Length: 424
Image (tube, rainbow, N blue to C red; front, side, top):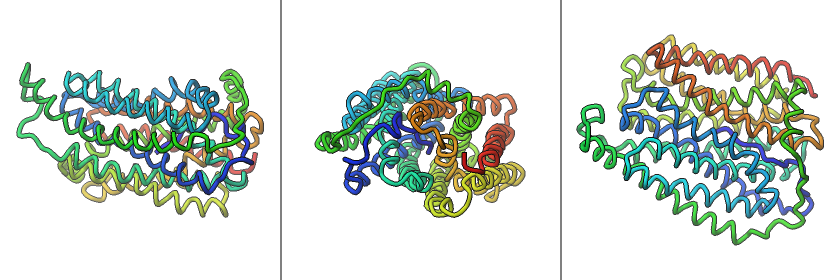
């Protein structure tokens, strides 16, 4: 899953950080927010059926979730600068817990808008936790191995995105009702939505309990970082960096990459359920989401090694072309071959985010924190691209045609990789 760069990659002193002591903590955070983000791919088909939504309406789940990166990203970064990394992590975890608890009134009122509001609050907490996690990863090693280290950290993020959808599918998509929402109306429809959405509530209540425990543990270590110092910066200073071709191009590619990755993940269940693809039921298709994100996990472990020896820009170009080819293969074939070709795109996604991020931010020096803030906002592509993909799917009545948009995103990313193949 896409990661939000921290607001201050260089503004805190690494001299007082005990790296071995913090590594497990940071990896756990990557695992948690990665898994929670990937659960959107499971609840989208569930809410689509419950509220008889078209693809455009269903993609509002991702729109509201990833809009938090644009709305909360900069304020969240300022909060972390004010209260510190560990307390910032607690604030993010508590906000995530509040978002999970909001699923209770969402289910009781059987209102789609309340579900969307709950997701926005949950995502706001995720953004704050990511603002904490990424700077710490940047500080836990040498700058020369930043590509490799951030890729390795994302592998733990991918472990969460692999595990959570499997168990989420069993819990949320596992109970099949004898009727569907489009067969009901009035009070019967409201009762059906309340009953069927209880599975979603149960899942997120379990997450809320887990988050409360993690927050308590982190609070216990709230003073673990000594001598923490942050430089002040403004969003306007970050915007000025967009005039630099390499950084501006890279920030745009973050927008496109996150959008493409999220759009494909959001469509997997409905895509695999199609008769000419794999004709799966909702639960079986939901379990396969883990293969998409699992491919990214495997690819990140491999990529952390490959990027030490091969130009990151050329690797980025190669995997982007691979993603385009897999989309073409999937949309032009049928059966299992079509389905697994789409799922294999997760493998090509593996190194994209950390590689784009580090290529874009090369040689920013003291402006690194400002650049991170802008890229943090660029993750809003996860809100925009999936929504546009849903619009195309509804207008064309074809998920295959809708995948043209992610393919275009990958083509532009391939061009950036070639452009940035040499050191800045």
